[in-house]
Image (cartoon, rainbow, N blue to C red; front, side):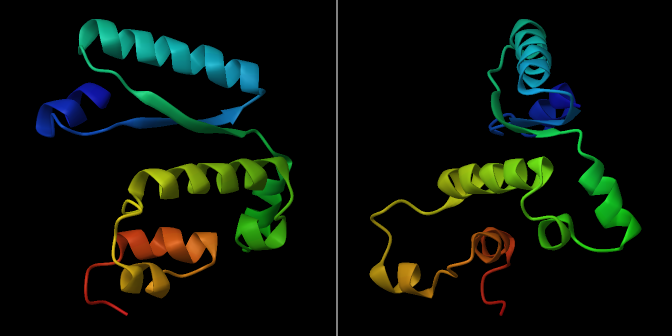
Length: 124
C-alpha cells in the first residue's frame, strides 16, 4: 500500500500508526521493519506517528455504540489516540506566522481542531 501511495503521489509524507499492538516495544519493532522495507524497496523515508495498544475498552465502546473517547477517555487506547491527534495537529497546523485572525478562529478542543483541518474552506 505504501508503494502504491508513493507511486500515485510521490511527495506524500507518510506517517505510520501501529494498531492493536501488545506493547510499545512491539510497536517499535514492527515500525522499524516497515521503515526498513520502505527505505530499501521504495527509497523513501516514513515516520512513526504513534501506536494504539490492544485495549478491551475499544470493544466495549463498540458494543455500547459509543465513541471510545467519550465512553472511556482515560483508557490506554484513548490516551494514545489523544497523543496521535496532538502530533497530527503539530504537523498540519499553519506555522506561527499565520494571521492572528485565523488563530483566533481556531477551535480550542483538540478534536474540533483536528476536524477543522480537514473541513473544506468556507464550510461551517
